[in-house]
Length: 357
Image (cartoon, rainbow, N blue to C red; front, side, top):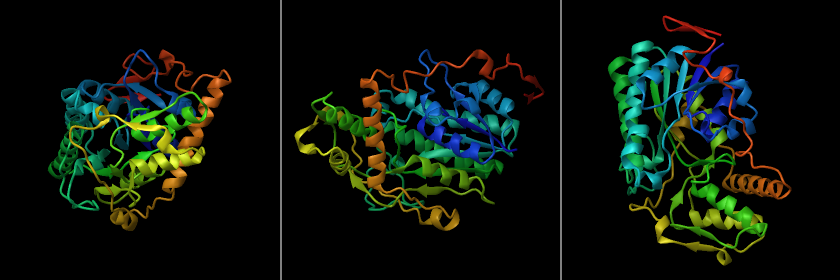
């Protein structure tokens, strides 16, 4: 049985990847950061919470990263953890750079010292391209980051390549364009839109305030993007790939589509506020995934319309359930008992880097 270690397992991508790899017969270990408010609702929504092994870890603590690698003894590592809110990275530039960028070096060092034969995946981002002059971006398009988050991602992307070449590590990066789902966090504009539409349609809210409506993004479904990154680590040689749908839509297109689903005219409810604009705007991102289609035999299937409908329908369902007296999924999860957490003091006997369960 293959074993895998996923950082950021409580996030959207971590949850979908866990679901995928469990179906493929993997033993799944996932790291999470201890916080006072539990954040396991995505794993519970996909019914994988009780099927994976949880390891408390901090990306900034190399010791805890090395411990996570020793405890899980994985065949593959997927580093999905990051401070991924682009707008917030301007306000918390130092912290974002350390978590999203520098932490990857610590992870690679831990891997190199423990077992350089582990396959490593680094989650890169289309934001690295920034506000470039190219209509379509592929693996050879120059990077031009326009935010602290994008700069940190580019550092992580570059250091992964350096370790791959310097130490002969199987390491690759997936340059994923915007990938959304009902599990997306409220901080992202896609979810802010669909949640706002749901509230307005049920009479719970009167308006939706957004930033730049002209910005264009290549939006795909997160669930099927995870299939692509898994395929990357199954290849004979490590390579970087752009993962996208190849079709771009503006924020206003997303808004109109979402309001159309509930039968409302978006122009009556949407307002813009300069405070939601980024200091440096990225106007257009559209990916070219021909390399992935050819080499990985991967191709996106969920259309833009289907994606938006999926998200709006789920947010409407959640709000209706709330009005009927049920808690939101993120209010319901119970913090896992200490017996479920894998630490140095857990039941597993850790000797010379080996752990038995």
